[in-house]
Amino acid sequence: VVVDEKDGPRAATACVRAEPVAELDRITAPTLVVVGADDAATPVSTAEVVAQAIGGARLEIVPDSGHSSTIEQPEALSKLIESFVERY
Image (cartoon, rainbow, N blue to C red; front, side, top):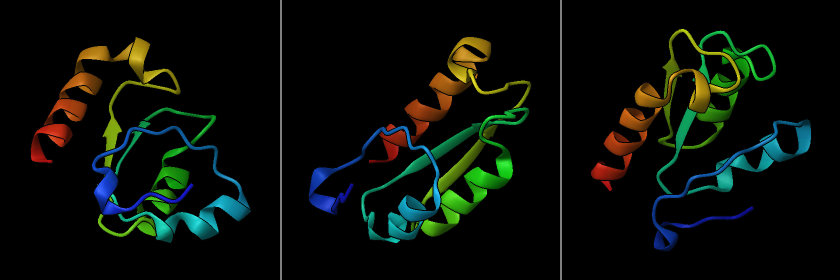
């Protein structure tokens, strides 16, 4: 996936594998990376790698949440997304 600034903010779900991670630096759109603090499927360390690979990405860790932050902490997640979107 290649996204440039003219596309504006994007919401995306990414499965992190060796090949896609190598291409993350091609993303130039504002990017929010969100991970649950207790996510075993996609741990915080993986989200950190993703956020670091995307220039200027914002990493947010949702407390008291696993892989289903939309269900476990919907209000916290909504606030993060709203705050991000308001900036752009």
